[in-house]
Image (tube, rainbow, N blue to C red):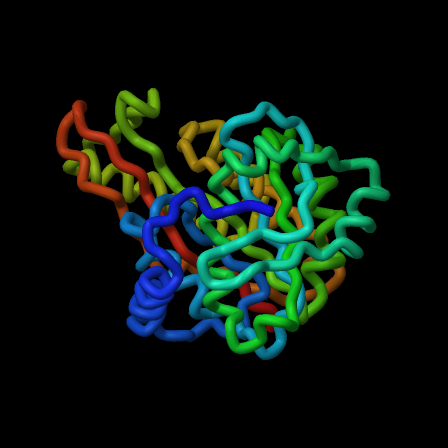
Length: 287
């Protein structure tokens, strides 16, 4: 079992925070088949993430795949948890052992150690929001947490193909965990396009370029964008897997669209000493 490290608030207080953020957002892209949402502390990105979670329809969602990047351990494939239940301050979330069995049989996955599982926040920060979005059906769904390594483009295609059959099912939801640009000396990234004005405007322009490419649902263009600008999007591999899964379904004639609904920065960088992290929330719809 796993406890939420970032107990920014005990159950009731956290519940009230999540409710507050969700109540300020419209559900325009419901039911989402997949969402992209940030994984920083809720004080920074809680209100941004609400824009994605508001698009989740608990009435039809029965299995939630949570794809998060590995921050602490080098991983060239994807890894599965070794526990059965994730605890959140709201209620416990059950891991779907049947789907885990199917994934395990492919030979494409490894096991996360308990230590890796507990240290990694990219999946963890989505658990309370998942619990909140699904609370009206809390005993009727399971989760499938997947830790995504530093995949090659070929591996992103392979995992995309594997997950595409799950993405095709309307009762499944994919939660893709990613922050956007990490800018500043502490992130060793300081791309700046002066033509955009202040540094934070240049960062926004760079992020929105990437977001537009994601909205075009083109994994190759997204890879090329990353090669060109090296934007420090920590969930680029989970996003790559999602784009490849979508691509696979589009080949079979499925019609989908992705829209970003919110963008935010932890602070506005104006000089070289500043640093910031960007957040974006969006939803995939099947038509």
